[in-house]
Length: 197
Image (cartoon, rainbow, N blue to C red; front, side, top):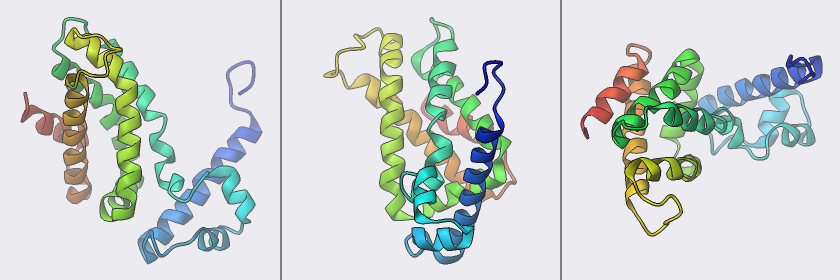
């Protein structure tokens, strides 16, 4: 970033390269399967070296998960912005909608990536790890909303509420991918979460 807040040419070029490599990788994953596609395959198709690949992505799975890392900040900000007196489940339900809107804004690409995540058992652990990290970040705010001590890790209530919200989100995402663009994501999230309250 420049001092004026604008992104410089070097950063724009880096972002473009990351997006290009990721698009090539997703094509290969869909064509050959995630497990069958190697980093070498991606490098050959993208015309880059292994060193270059690992400069942009710490591991192969990061090609798919890179877009989801900063979304935990969006989710936390949305939750913190909800009214203090709002019921914890309602606050979580409303806080997830901006996340759904972000997914929807690039729906074709995101649905392709989610389809790979859902359909590839080896990626399930990485997805769960991502949700666990999101849950840790949300836990203090959820605990405050439940009226419990944010530092009390022996209280299962915040983790249970977060896990329930994420299970609803996963159900909505699976339905959205299955609908192949015929449904909007936010109403699916709201419907899934509405089942629990």
